Amino acid sequence: MVIKVNALNQQVYAILKNKILKKEILPGTRLIDSQLAKEFGISRTPLRDAIRKLVENGLVVPGKNGKGYYVYKPSAKDINEIFEMRLILDIAAATKLINTIIPEQPDILDKIAQFDEDDPKSDDSFVLNDEDFHNALIKFCNNSRMTEIYADLQAQTRAFRSVTSQDQTRIDKAKKYHKKIIDGFCSRQLGETIDAIKKHVEFSRLDALSDYSDQEDI
Image 1 (cartoon, rainbow, N blue to C red):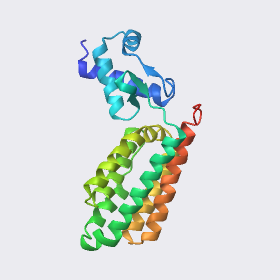
Image 2 (image 1 turned 90 degrees about the vertical axis):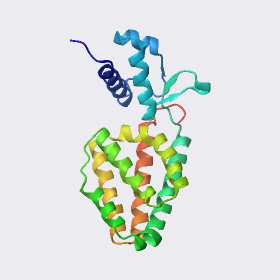
Image 3 (image 1 turned 90 degrees about the horizontal axis):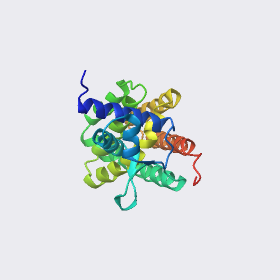
Image 4 (image 1 turned 45 degrees about the horizontal axis):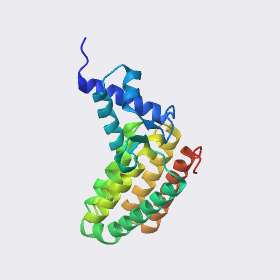
């Protein structure tokens, strides 16, 4: 049986991702393609493709000056700053939606409410649902710069969500916060919506700090 290159890429990606999420490959570790290719008994091409996909998902980052690739290793300062910015944007989006956008386009409420019907499970399905939900709220504001900034933050927090998605208890709690946010929008209660957003972002921030607390610079 001949394994197609694309299938091999996916297999290598899945193996590396699993090792990173389980911290069998620790944050800050350099991924040397020649060594990994030898370990897996494959050529460097599918290995490099897998690493590129890990970069897209935020689990791996290029080294300084573009030299090498490393498993993402945020500092406490990185985590706090990222979630601080996310909170600012989420609150700004909620304020604009409830005060301005929804009164003019009430059908947006139906689109927001649809997210309450989704039932993401663990792993990638939760990550994608979480991203889709928050992206939708930002995009409904129709502000291209806000969307661009949020996309950058999303890339930086993707590693946090990937780790969080391994814990069903966290998923269930995040889903409850999503519901509270959605209920706030549907009732057009800005105070309730912002309160739910604050609790959701803080919950995510503390989880991220907990996941990376074993690193020497945290």
